[in-house]
Length: 431
Image (cartoon, rainbow, N blue to C red; front, side):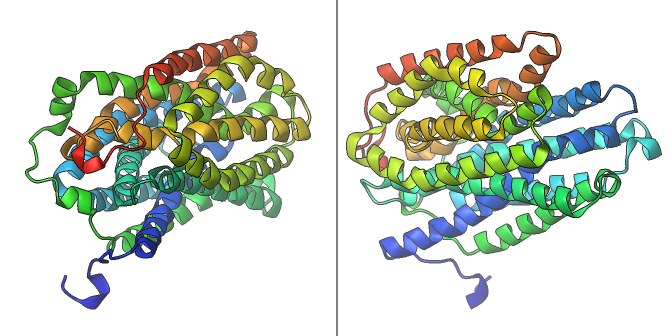
């Protein structure tokens, strides 16, 4: 443990802090590559883990398990958030990656339904449960770490690394999907090719853990003093309004992200017969533009505050969600236009919300403060978004879904309006 190879990185400068955030971001990208691969390959997974028959029903079942993974995120947010507040942010970041590696490996080696019957979907549920625990803890630990390591006046910029790395991971899953669809015939892709991204993801997660072994603990955490037992209970007891505000922040954010950044290409394929490769390339192009814009939006939140950008996001989607959906047709070009506009608007929130939520809680409860309320809201409203779109579309009510997005974004907009600006607070002085 005392060898040079495993000695902790000691932060003495802003440049070294930036390099450390880059290392953490690499691990986060690997984590979200694993998480996003499930959606990218859901249509191929479905017939492997469920009996033959109705293809639409099989996809719905696979997406239901996608939602099940989300329902383990609150538990991961609570448990790994508490672990982060008691043992440190760096320890929590390593734990989350090992859990994700285990879940991905299980999907990669799980036998199909034709060989083991009902055990196949059971193993898939177990794998997604483990990944859900990991994802709930990762976003909590990552957000806390980058905000605590950031210099004052740069937390918005540093926080942009969260969604940059998340999107890079999603892009990697999308690009590998494109490569496999191009390189493999349909029968090979359906029989074994879909396992490749999950096996690769498990290896990536292990590498991410290796990189994270050497990250230092944040000075803010080190100066926090005594730890508390059961941090989640203290959050709910001592900070109920801040917890409720996290829920309000997240309602619109999560449904927008999992609709426009994650599921819209698959929706365009099923609802409008957009070719799979065209839909995926449209997604890649939109997400590249989104990643490029995030640092600038983060700097805007540092200069002008979190609240203005949050209000732009909330009001924008409250007014424009039905229009965005009306423009999604059989054209991959229009899919690209809609995704780009939606992701740029979402970027206003992505660059401001993580810092805004963390700035509400004291250091000894910071990870737990967002861990449970954030992950629970994501599970209930983000994880169910793809399933709800498919379900409503399959029953002839697809036009209802945009108004569901409007309702949630309106609630978030009210929450943003009532939020008191926190960009200038010092994290060590939050009580």
